[in-house]
Amino acid sequence: MTKWEIEPVPGRGLYRMADGELALPLRISSDGRHRAITQLALTPAEAEQLHAALCYALGEQSPPAAAPECRRPIRYPGGRQRY
Image 1 (cartoon, one colour):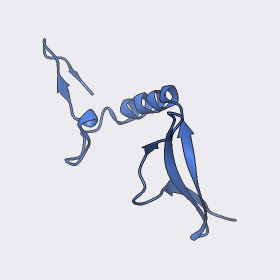
Image 2 (cartoon, rainbow, N blue to C red):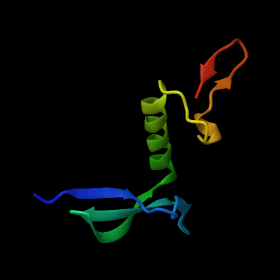
Image 3 (cartoon, rainbow, N blue to C red):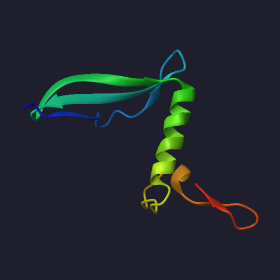
């Protein structure tokens, strides 16, 4: 059975396309062999939905030291903490 893998392309991060959509380059391989590079294109609304879903899924875990600012806890007046 063929083992397929899809992962971000090292060194090529998320970028904004000319039409305003966001694109994440992805590398597709099977059985350890490179097959193709494509991209996941997201509208700003889709990117926001994905961001919210990832934050929700990661919310219970402490952010790693190198995490971007949006994964660090924010203290709001009254002591509430949100991500």
